Image (cartoon, rainbow, N blue to C red; front, side, top):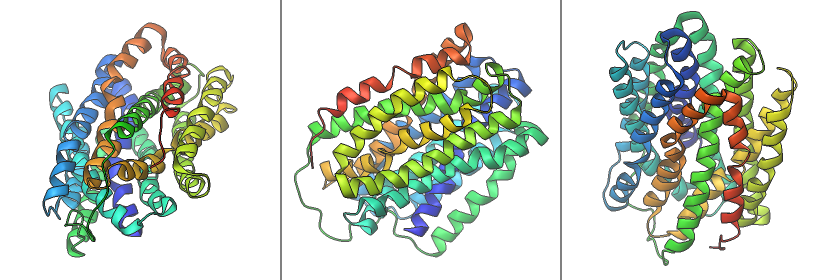
Length: 366
């Protein structure tokens, strides 16, 4: 699980770098809010739409090389995006990086589940790797971006190449045939409900990570450093919430844990939106990160429980399509920000999780 978690951390670091770079594309390149959120949209399209098809492929064939190749592609595409000049080329490179993410998740999710067995806590280690990657992105990127501008993304190419090399050397069977025969009946109805919850969670995630720094800078009046701390705090909360969710699920059940996360996020978002000053809301950013990620690993495991004969497809949808779907709505957030500022986006986000609470009522035990 340590290898899976490490690879997941490096892969998802490049997803986290996209929102971490958005403020610097706005400030350094003069992009408008809609153009900036177009970068998030490109990453979402590249990483979300292909994943169900890749998941079906890894359920049928031995595709050992998909995970390491995906990590390498994710890093190289994102790393070169900050060096590119024309906006269309930047979009294309971020789209390519998203495709690398799409290659990684289904194969890695399948392999990690085979290693974890029926333990939600063990699966949370793999899922937390992704949260660690998202956390590391602003922590590592903010100082570099402040010093060098968006061209600093090139510094993040080597980790992708190194991890891909290690995975290939260790001959990790990321998408090999199943360790044991897969049996059971696929339950598409509950899986569809779960996918809806993951989409709502993705809408929250994308809105927060895209605009949290701009919210601190342009609404709360902070500097870049404090805004970077806010994003890092949210990401740290994501790691804590992911690990906490796995342990809660082993004790109280996956369905109940998912519902807990859905309800807890609403008052925390409201408090974050109304809290004054630039320092006091930092604790709320951490708390929101914890609450929003309590269901993360739980939903991945639950999806594979609903589709026991299709673990790659389940991972591809929950880690990919549904997880990235929020990025498809990023331009809508951009329009809201153009009209009402980043604070308008956070006002809308206070209402979004109600849909997850309603959907959670219809979840079934596997």
